[in-house]
Length: 305
Ligand code: SF4
Image (cartoon, rainbow, N blue to C red; front, side, top):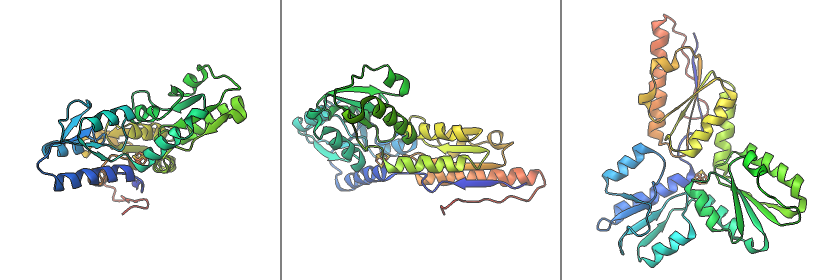
């Protein structure tokens, strides 16, 4: 029996998450006498959050909670303009760790926004990045989560619309949405390029791997939107997909019956966690093969390591 594990090169922290964590680490190293807050969880990964809690970092969602002189780090998702303004007036020190790509999306939405009647934003209504993006539109805005919701909106030909997406949205869906609106609005539509390449590349690589294996394992926080979307795209191209947070969730029950595995991870999953999952999976497969008196195990790592 031959068993492959294809590990995605794109698995793990993206540039925006790495940058935000390095800003937080630097603040912890350099500022020991002031309380450090992050405005919302720095990333959607419970193990990483527990690590920073241990170091004294507090999470707040309330601009009124930090005292003057405290440090507030804006995470990679960014925050709404009004909240940033309130924090500034409260005399807290702000460390802006908004991902450069989210910042680009905010600025594109803000640019010339008064010349357009309405922003159409493809994103999740309860996502913090989306709340931030909407605050940059100086016009009416409609938020929609899928094509069905978009079709239910009252979109009037002859008015000027802009279309943008939350940075981590699915690229293929956004292209379908763009084509639908272009047909309806023609020259009255401006499409803003706000989807992040890291997300696109991770999704494309996940699809490539999912097509080649029996079972996909996606590692990342259960609250992480980009990890959940990876599972969704994997499921469309593979018969089985498991979303796990750590290696502790892998068991012989999960892996039995499959002959090839794909392994990828969301943008907020540390390399250490991915490595532990990889090695546990590999060891279990060796065990399973050995117990079947079959020594044909062959672990193939795709591109990485
Ligand atoms: S997924 Fe892209 S936009 Fe989001 S934080 Fe990472 S690099 Fe930035």
